[in-house]
Image: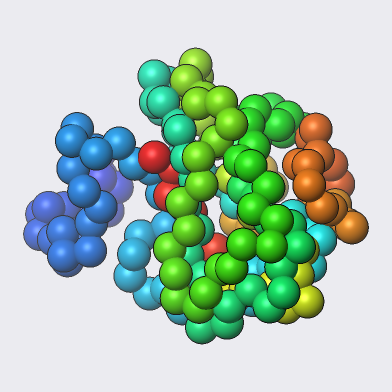
Length: 190
């Protein structure tokens, strides 16, 4: 057995297909994502007034200034509030920063939405942080993402989760009592 376990091939050849869908060079354009850009689809990741959060790996020293989510085939129908937020890697994740509430601004179908955090966040310790999206609308938009399974083994975390209800202008101080969510949206921190 080698450091690659039972794998006998050339790792660079095995993952070569990833180069065709990879993100920009992070030494030129800082970015971190929770999912690769392949195999994604239109997922109903949002419910009105409920926050959906996904884990995203951030490295010590990263400076996160904005979060990006992409709507799927369904636009936001009559939105009254929506925002993104970044939460800590603590056991009960604490709010680090939120974007401005977008109120009634349109979010069309198949549209990349990048929102600046109110305060840029310098990451002090590498780990899994939480990126969140909340939309209060007659019809929340679908998001580009994937479908994930519930944690199977002890110690595994959710790939997507919901929390809160009746949310409007402000992100909750913590992610309290999260519930597993099958639909996992793509998020990019930059």
